[in-house]
Length: 543
Image (cartoon, rainbow, N blue to C red; front, side):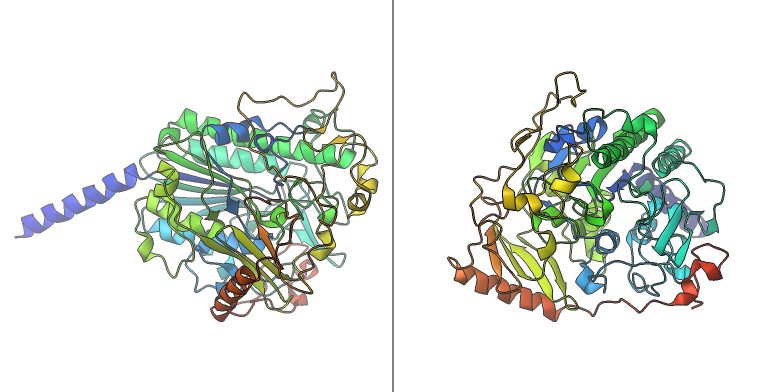
């Protein structure tokens, strides 16, 4: 009997080991504040992104993919598979000495994947809380972390500014603050760390590598906001506007990094059993928003708004394990879908996830199958009193969803564009003479214009812009309704013509509101000021 029991235990152990060895490696790459029009596979004539394009054209381009409008909510949704209204992460972002984070009763991605035998590493930005150590990555399922806890910082000295009175180092390996990375560019640091993890990984074990880059978020607002080494910036002499040229250098460094990660996967033999997801966390901060020079054009709005430019995400899936690839997915997909989708792809049962709002979309993506989602909530913010959702082909907006940044902002090209275009000046006077809405700025033949891929970029066709496009919708006065498939640029508010649909979507929004938990935001706590911790952002609360 003892021999039989030992034999059964041995067989169970071997079975578990075999299952773990065959699970796919998951590489989840997040670009910070990348705009829809900041990659060449979406038609950018200014900034070639050959490595990201390669993932896109040889994988799946997600053309009906949505994220939250700002950092913390998207990252919470990515980690939990739950909408921010259900985790208290729906209002703004965690800043400086904010004494809150993603609630500890939420099970997150690395904890789920640990149950499947995965090795789990995070390289880059966290932004889900650090006021107590229990909220940091290595206490929440990750085995290692090289990166930072807050939302933005200097790319070279790695200090983070919450205000002029709160400024300190935010860069660490696991819990140890690192003083030795001064002068090293964060995009390159994170790429090198990701490549090292891949090369040192035991291929017999499945790998979860979460790679949320700092790029291309702005740096500290009272210092150098857009930063890249000269070797990257010099690739773009055709972009006259220095701020857009700096951003182009930042994007190019990111693209190079992704190329190095892909090469490492290939060289190590992991690529053939890998799933690579590339996503932005929100739309780009265009036209000087957040001191940045991103572009979502021709989509409306910017980061931190519920206009399409704020929530329509750049997204790609690439994997040899896909049954079909090289296509453009028009099926609706939301950032909450990644956890159940990747969990299923890893051999897990999504029914074991705790109250997910996301849908398992692996079969849909792998086969280009039927949609599994027909609606998605963009957000309900009870503090700022706005909301938005999409049901089928219709999108409803109500409240101040970003009325100060509701324009259509072309990418800066000429030296004076940041002055001429800034905020919404150009929307009142039309586009400048030099700009072609269909082709972007056309540099001189010898100016180093970006290369075109052999593939056709996936772009947005807005249709004619009516004269009242800027004035026919004011959701602070009455809800606005858009038919997104025919009007992706939100030119035509059809609320008056389709009041029946407005009522239907308002009812659905109300139903969502009944399930909402209060925002978790807490008043600032000066005990978290780096001046109390040797100039370092450190946890300051003992639980």
